[in-house]
Image (tube, helix red, strand yellow):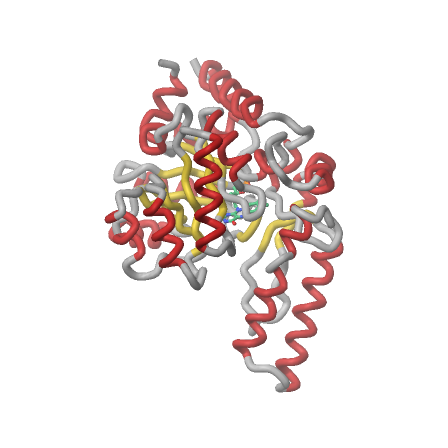
Length: 334
Ligand SMILES: Cc1cc2nc3c(=O)[nH]c(=O)nc-3n(C[C@H](O)[C@H](O)[C@H](O)COP(=O)(O)O)c2cc1C
């Protein structure tokens, strides 16, 4: 057993994997091929349910099972209108790990998933919320900093890790996410008390990813500073920031907010409708980039670690590189 194996032991046991490396669910990207490839390579793949219907999720889980016998999870967005049916689909397939994303889990959902025999993993955006989630019975936490791709919170990974790990990592496994591109960082977070890590950006353009070639090329060309967070321009219109590569869609999102704010000023729409319009703007934008390859008008969600993604590589090579970098870093410490 290597030093890295020892540091990863608790997380790997919890996930049922060789390595305590989760691939964070990415809508449109984390479907059966990428998920199975990650689990087959010793990591933990997570299907992104996103806006899928229960029927689509059913098919995706079944499809993933034809490609891997290894452990994998399913990520559900808590505000999905059919969250309850989606939980039933996971139960039908005896999914072992359910990740709840996008806000605090609805009442009763954690208990229901656990009653089905699955483990529940939630995102903790702050220490107080981590404690609340632990009281609600979650089995593991992910703490994700603002370096990450996709929807993000306001705090960096390094600060969340310092604030949350010392207080809760003895109670349950905690996985650190956001901005991790190399194994040295994995080693560092494990030494700080994390049980494992979660990466998204590093896997999005892997060989097994079904993302459009244009999407992958945009990743290979981009540097850290190109992955910027969307900006809220009107205090009345709360916008959950999204980190994506700067492009035409970044500009048009600002224009869209201005347009909606003006409609509010003129009284032509209500606040509820205004906020809905803002959220709907994103609906489809990621699909346009990932599936259709329109990397100018679509949303190329990517974290700041995108600068460390320089070529298309099989998932197994990415995981092998991360592991050997982490092992070398630990060995260098003596
Ligand atoms: C293209 C893309 C799409 C994502 N979609 C989701 C999603 O649907 N649900 C979710 O919980 N997280 C989503 N994320 C976040 C990832 O699961 C993961 O936590 C994040 O990428 C980790 O940070 P990193 O990008 O710095 O590695 C997405 C990230 C990216 C890059």
